Structures are given as C-alpha cells and as structure tokens.
Length: 451
Ligand SMILES: Nc1nc2c(ncn2[C@@H]2O[C@H](COP(=O)(O)OP(=O)(O)OP(=O)(O)O)[C@@H](O)[C@H]2O)c(=O)[nH]1
Ligand SMILES: [Mg+2]
Image (cartoon, rainbow, N blue to C red):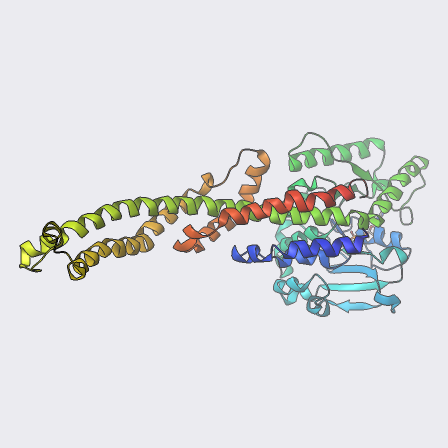
C-alpha cells in the first residue's frame, strides 16, 4: 500500500472511534491534526547555541538571522513554498486561520504568540515534505515569564507534532535545558523512546582544548542523566559550524562527520512520520481506554450500590404490598377490605389491589430519588478523593500513564450522570483495545524497518 492510501485508510479507521472520544469528552481533533500536514523538525536550545546557523548551513543560504546576543524571538517554520510558488513570509495570523495547517489550535496562545509566529518559504527540494521550526532561544526561567504567552505550552504542542526534536546546548550554558526536556518528555508518547529527541552540543570549536571539551561533555551527560533518570547516556552529537567557526585546529575536522550525520537525521525526518503517527494514535486511544476503564470501575460500584439499594427496596415494597393497607386500616379505619383478608376470603379483585400497588411503589420512588440525589453523589465524592484504585496500575508504564491521566479522569467521573450505571463502558473499552491490537498492529508491521 502506498503511504497516502495507508494514511487515508488509517484515518478512516480512527474516524470510527470518534463517537467514543466524544462520549468521554476527549478531543479527536488533536489526533487529526498530526495527520494533517508535513513532517516537522523542532529545533530548541539556548539563545546563541547556533540553531539558526545550523538551519542556514543545512539549506545553503542566509535564511535565518544569526548573531551573538538573543537574536530571534520568533517561531519560524521554514519550508518549501506550495506548488513551487515564490518564496516569502506568511504571518502567524494567516497560519492559525488556515484549516489546512495543523495550527488552528494555536489561536488560544493569544496575540503575543501569533505576532511571534511565521512561516518562511524557500526553494529547497529537501523541504517539500519537511518543515524546520526555528525557535526563540531559551532564556533563564525569570525572563521566560515576560514573553507574554505560554512558551512551555507552545513548545510542548510543537514537540508533540514534530517527528524530530533537536535540543541544542552550547558548552557554556547547559542549565536551562532541563525544564524544556521535561515539557517534551511529558508530551511525547511513552513508547516513543528517545528516538525522537536528539541532543546536540554545538560550538565545540570554542572549547580551548580537549580537556575543556571533555569537561563540558561530562557536565552535559550528568545533567542529562539527572533529567532522564536513566543511567545510559543518550547519543549526543558534538558539532560545530565550519562556516563561522575558527576551525584552524586540524583535530576539529574529525567532528565534521557528526555534523553531516546530524543534518542527514534532520532531512530524513519524514521517514519517521508514519511510525510516529501510529505511536500518537496509539497513545491517544490507549489513554482513552484507561479513562474508560476508570469510568467502568466507577459505574460498576454505582451499579452495585444501586443493586443493594434495590434489594432492600424490594423487601420493603413486598412488605408494604402485603401488610401496608392493613396498617392503614388499623390507624384510620380505611379501606374496608384490605388485601390479605380479601385474599383469604377469595374476594380480592382489581380494586383491592390499587392501594397495595401504590404502597409498594412508594419505596421504589423514594429509593431512586435517594440514589440519584445522595447515594450516587456520596459514592462519586468518595471515588474522586481516592481515585487511584480505579484502574490497573500493575506496570511502571501504566503507573506513569495513570499519573498523567489522573486529573482528566477525575474530571470525567465528576461529569458522569447516575445513568452511567447502564452505559456500555466495557464495550467501548473493548472496542478501543481491539483497535490498538488488531487494526493498528498491521501498520506497525508494514513500517518496521522503514523508519
Ligand atoms: N565559533 C562558533 N560560532 C558559532 C557556531 N554556531 C553558531 N555560531 C555563532 O554564534 C552566534 C549565534 O548563532 P545563532 O545561529 O544566531 O544562534 P541561535 O541559536 O539561532 O540564537 P537565537 O536565535 O538568539 O536563539 C552567531 O554569531 C553564529 O555565527 C559554532 O559552531 N562555532
Ligand atoms: Mg536564531
């Protein structure tokens, strides 16, 4: 199957899950947005770490402005013009309004963001299926607040859509990278591994000597392992920009190979797209399945509360049915012919039954009122204050997933109506799991080795 047809078919299958997403108040738009446009590479890093320089070098032109102090405070998408049109700049206001682009959701970041967002089109064959995102250099945490929009949210959202995220450090400032890494880690699917994040130490030509370089590299590794919580160190590309650096030192040239490899990784990002799309869908559907599992547990508890209530009610109703009218007669002398004596006399008729039926109905009416008004709400309150036993958390993967979804799940539970007891949650969850296991798997299979 070719990539386009494959994409169409998966989109159709995902579309069939839309009613379930809607029912549980989850947004399927985010899932659609990733299927919408071309592959993206997000380049993040400290200011002056050489992001724009790398992009210029890659595209062989002076596309992005570069400079020693914080130079650029904009998010720029750099990509090929549609239909070989003239290169130019498209402002953020147009980008967030264009339904064919995946940025309509970015309107919510406000005017301050939109005025710092743009697309620069260029003529470059490598950018037909690829957009590179140059980003404002990271400053320290205090000044981050002054940007006038939620920088963390923006990069989290861009990282979610990107097939490759470059984190560039220069040897002198590796500190601010930690927050960024955490944002990215929380937005990417857990099973995405580290294949989507590439660490780059740039400007290594500025190290005075080999000892200096090793020290910087060591510091970075330490920071990284603190961030990732893992002992194994991810690959870190050590690079410098040959065009602007002082590469008089012969020994530096060895690292040019790394620079080339890095550039190849960027240009090859579109190959990763399909498997990332699968991971993304997998994550969304898997998340929903976990939330539905919680709804299922809650509904089952509410169901058993209702069943217990009804058992008591039934006993009350039966007693009321048989003896209620006798009791009333003992008190007010009416009705003349209560049910039981009439039965013994063989004189019971329709009229004798009316009052017992009314008496029997009363407990049911009261119980249902009680359940809806008090019983269900009390159970809900109890569940929400201690929600952690609603889903299976038997693996580290599921524990982490639950931590991520806990808040949303509480919100979901607080919106469920008492009729949730009769809702087919189990069927919905099974459908989601079947989708992951049967419908998504073959695509993974087709793509093993391609990305
Ligand atoms: N010596 C040396 N200088 C570099 C290297 N890469 C970039 N530079 C210089 O460092 C300065 C900053 O580079 P930019 O590419 O503008 O950095 P940036 O990350 O885009 O910075 P902001 O846009 O401000 O966040 C420029 O003056 C570049 O010429 C390198 O590998 N070695
Ligand atoms: Mg720049």
